[in-house]
Length: 299
Image 1 (cartoon, one colour):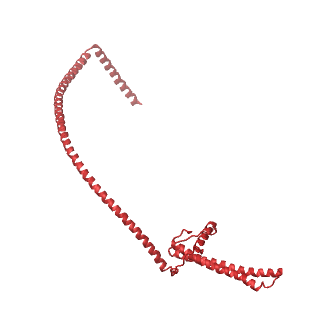
Image 2 (tube, helix red, strand yellow):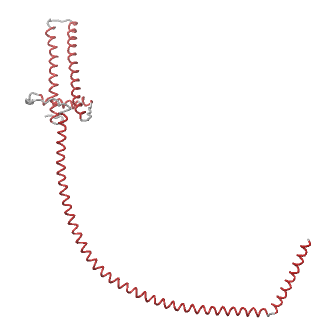
Image 3 (cartoon, helix red, strand yellow):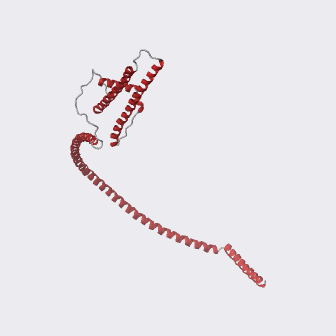
């Protein structure tokens, strides 16, 4: 059986609409047939007709058929608009915005699929037995429609809640296993740290003994070095004091030698001549200063 890609409920609604359309189409075809039958019975009573008479008969038939077909097409369009209005009203109740693709209404492939679907549903060989059931009317938008959608949403949420509960149980089991594994690892870590602590204590005792021996050796060596430095310092201080005394003695000898040398120099003839020349020059300078002062006073 051909399918429309809809769920069972919506497909049944489509079938109901197609049944309604087939009924209306059948009535209109019967009306067109009756137009031709009336024409045959009322006008085609003579054996021969003129061209004008035939033209008049066809024109009248054309007008009647045109009116019937136009009325059916208009009625079909209005019916489709009412159907769309119902669907859009229900969608707007839930703040939905439906969209239509007008170009798909002339898609030959889809139209053929609809024809196959209608043929499969309504042909006499494949016609399903009609079950006498009470057909539900369109549920009012402010009552049943909302309740039905809410019930579906509640069912969906309940199913999702059950899935979440199952997932939560799985996660709790995994968390419990992880905590057990963590506890085992912590105990193993504590045991390992205890073993390492005992080893570290033994190693620290050995290191401490070696360190104490090293410190004692360094202390002994430092004391020896300090004693040597003390003796060297004393020797240096004694040598420094002796050098100071020698320096003072040499300085005293040098000063006495300088005095002796000056005394001997003053006793030489050259020193006496130089002294006499300096005395004369000083006298001359004094005389010149007196004269210069006398001339300045006269001016």
